[in-house]
Image 1 (cartoon, helix red, strand yellow):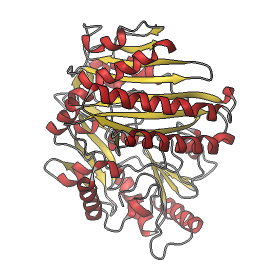
Image 2: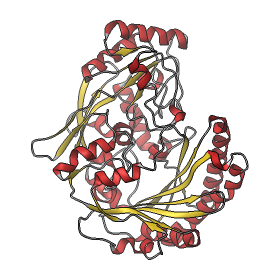
Image 3: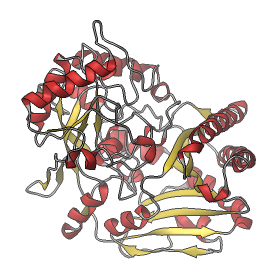
Image 4: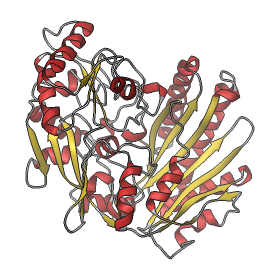
Length: 491
């Protein structure tokens, strides 16, 4: 299974000639195409979260409607020209949402943002980041299951499945999407939902950009006045208790209003444990489900009643723009506290043992942050997904999954190869160690994955075959597998 690989079509011209042709073709047909040195090009070519994503597209295509996008896509396909698509620009993988020489399609002006008459559904364009969505919904005392950090983009999260604060209530964020407006490879525009193009509807729930370009998400809203949320940070001496709390919550939680994101945050000479706690209640604080964490003395905490918009803004403050970064995903699965704790300790110890090798190669001043984050996904979460029709991710409610993400952010592109080699080696060591004790699972959450990781293999053979069949039906020429080199490919 390939990742970020361009497969040339028969008769495809050289990359530079194809890129020039693509820009020329759509520039001659559409006004929304911008060449280098224009103000729009300069803005959009830099409008990414991470330095890792910065490239040099031949031109920028910024459609204002789905019809304009469809017309542009038709022209690009006819010219056999390469292109990339950027939504929020938060996936920090070079080439995932940008391109050298080819056409960069940006969703910035596809900005539908309106509630249905009964306010039960939000019609949402792909040009937004989640902070804008929550700010819009706050006066209505509503929220949607979306990104936990305000700067994260809408389409990337939803098409990856989507981990949100509401996972134990409604499953993955994609499970609350009831309709997609999609531009297909042949330039037609369809509505995909439970009764129309139902196969495509299912595939878009975790299948990413292999089927079409989504120009509108219709997503169910949730009532929300305030929540009790923030971070709870403990000193290094309590990290063993903190890891035990992580395993205990994963194994025992039965409260659907809860959500946690524990993280071990090391530095060159110490470490802390810091957990995001979210409880969906305007008047209940310190719920019993959080006691494994809140019983540990806090070095600092920001717990308070706040709106979802305020919480997303607070969490978004940790996002540093134009940094160099790598996220790497992984998962263990078990059914008991003891096994989960064993897996957590193995992963944390393996990661920590590798850190001296990284510090020996990069000056401390050039390391912005290192983290090991955790995300428990159990029966409540998966049952909630299945109750809404299910998705392509293939998780089983009989298991408890503890997903994790290795995070390294650094200053200076001179260290890109050093960090890349380090995370590849560290990930292999973690996978081997968890596999040796029977806890490894191949699921890698796309939203936290690195360029070298397999995604769809973790969805299960049956779901992969189904996704491939749907991709072939809606994109028989393989446009999104070949002309759009970025993203995780299903073939």
